[in-house]
Amino acid sequence: MTQQMGSQSLQFAEAPFILSSASVVGKKEGEGPLGKQFDMVCDSDKFGEDCWEESESTMQKEAAALAMGKASLKPADIRYIFAGDLLGQTIATSFGLMNYEIPLFGLYGACSTCGEALSLGAMCVAAGYADHVLAITSSHFASAEKQFRFPVEYANQRPLSATWTVTGSGAFVVGKSGGKAKITGITTGVITDYGIRDSMNMGAAMAPAASKLIVQNFKDFGRTPKDYDKIITGDLGYVGQEILCKLVKDEGYDISSVHMDCGIEIFDKEEQGTQSGGSGCGCSATTLSAHFLPQVESGKLQRILFVPTGAMLSQVSFNEGQNVPGTAHGVIIEHAC
Amino acid sequence: MDYINAFWVGGVICALAQILMEKTKMLPGRIMVTLVCTGAVLGAIGIYEPIMEYAGAGASVPLLGFGNLLWKGMKEAVDQNGFIGLFMGGFTSCAVGVSGALVLGYLASLIFQPKMRK
Image (cartoon, rainbow over all chains, first blue to last red; front, side):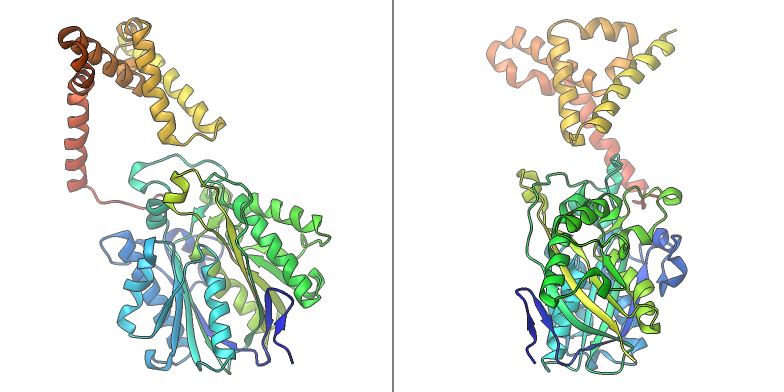
């Protein structure tokens, strides 16, 4: 059978499995609605390190170790790592994972990196280039604020549309056989520019990319929203969710009853003051690992479309007055018995 | 009475800046620069000095006061040294404030550790 579907999608002839996953989060995430579902919650957000960047690296290292341990694998059993984070030159990944001495592909897809890593990992395993790969991403509130907005010490005020970067790391072991969830297909996103310039309003910048990707997924696979139990975006938040449902509706599909957003699930916006919701690579990765994947594994959800979204800006592009373009990566995850 | 005047004038200035933060898409840096420039202009047209006499620290501590100070230093230096004063006065008059912020900021960084926002 042909594995290439439509213009942007793949359907794997031999679907790779997600053998195990792990989530490591900070204090605030641990106090949120999903708090009890995470594998590890650190009380200090520093993870025993001196600076925020090192804390993020340690978080990735811990998540990787947990995921490998759950699958009873050693670092030597992992053929490749596909990993990334939000920091410049993805240092959280390079510094965090270097001691494992596993061949590593460093990725940057902003907050969509989890989908990008799972897509490439699944392609790699499905093609027979590896028996086991590790897909891992992270974000840290304090290091991301420093990178993209203002250092936390500056005590800048946050507008209502601002999302809250999740402190967390999610890791997934993808392998040829053995798990209760499999990646049956992927849809890869294009960079979409909707003319948003406000780095405090990422949801609006990324919603058009998510909408394009979801509609493309329907077209490529000949599916409708009914074919998915849930369509789960990464970190559009409350602002982005509204825009997304409207944009997809304009294309003739109604996803409002099946759509969920990791950024909305991970925090309680009234109790925790997180305004528009959570964001960051760690948001979609930890929520998928701790909340949605177990439901797919148990069969409660039979087929989901996981669509983490990313805002592809840098401090330089932003300071030079460029728009904030968005992207999205779609991963179809199904229950396997 | 001095305290009350300082309190309400300073409060009004901060409230106006907060309206800019809430109701416009201006970034904080731009709002700060706007305040400094406005202070310099208000000083130049002679409005800010009477406000400062009335409200004391309530008007001199916010960024408007910093703008006014820059203008005052510039004016004195130009009066004394002519054209070259343009490049001297501003820094001279704000030297205490800027050096104070640098030194105290450094001391604070030695004593305190960065913490996560709640």
